Structure formats: C-alpha cells, structure tokens
Length: 240
Image (tube, rainbow, N blue to C red; front, top):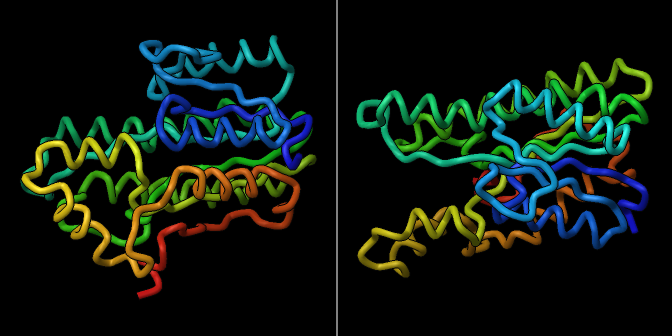
C-alpha cells in the first residue's frame, strides 16, 4: 500500500496512461482525483489544462474539498505529426498549449496544495523529449520543454519546507488510444507497428500499467531521494 493516505491529482485521467495511473494509485491505497475535459464523464473535476482560470477554480475546489494534495501527475497531452515545413502553426500552438502550458499551470496551481505536507510531481514527457524525429516538430519541442520545466520545478521544490519533488517520465509508444489514432489511416497496421518498434530493442510497445508502475514509484516515499530526474521507459530505445 505504497500510496496509503496520499491524495494524487491527475490530469488527462480519461486517457490511457492517466487512467492506468489513477487505478494504480487507488490499488496502492491512495485517493486519485481524476480531471479531464468536461466531455469525459466520471471525472472528479472538469479541467481544460490550457485554461489558467479553470486551473484556479479546480485548485480552489480541491483546497475546499481536501485541503491538500500529496502528488500531481501531469498526464494530459496530445501528439501532432508534421515537419517544420508541413505542420500548421495552429497545430503547433495547440500542441504547445496542452503539453507545455498545461504542465506549467498544473505545477503552478498545485504547488500551494503540495506544500501543505510536501509531495511529488510526475510530469509525463516522452522519449520524444529526449530524441527527435523529422516529423515531430511541435511534439519534440513540447516534450523537451516538459523535461527542463520539471528540473526547474525540482530545484524550486527542494528549497521548500516541506519539500516537493519533481521528475519527468519518458515513455516510448504506449498501447492505447494515442497509438490507435496514429494507425487509423495506414494501409497495413502490422507493417506500421513494425516500423514504430524497429528502434526499440525490446521490440514492442509499452503497456499502460508499466508506465503507471513507474509513476506510482515516483509518487511514493520509496523514491524520496529522486528529484530532477528524467526517466526513460522506452524498451532500450535511448540506449543506442
């Protein structure tokens, strides 16, 4: 019961990874506060992560309802395919707004709640925040920004009393909705999957539960001396 008595705020909780993390937090004895867009049902709080006013309202509501959080998982994110020439600027701005602004606002407005007892922030970046692709211009930019933002927050949180830790997690392709959306228009799903895993030494996609295991470890007291870290969960892709 690694998360016993811990309250964890999770963005993008209707998504594949966010939902897996929420479920594992609860399996480990914690309370998951699920947030996502209002169009997604069964969320504790409706939240558009790109809206500062929405973040203020949700943080105020959590303060009234619970008085604190012990963990924050910024899992909300989108992917956009496009080269520096082909991608529309509007798509770039949307990707940056969700992936970077959403993470920034989450850290900013959850921090007063985390400072009550100290806690841990887990920011979902990507292997694309460590290595680049020719057709991932905005996605690479956004996930690279999450990586260094997490380190800045970690250095700030280390100065607090009680302290707040911050780390970034960098998965490769994860089985679920985002991968399925990328495969929807391809001629051969199997050929596409083979191409996507060609650079992964373990030769498969990650499972949502594997990412959730890492996130819960970073949220728990087991990782009390880990902060400012960037942790790949990529089947060995970045080892090459």
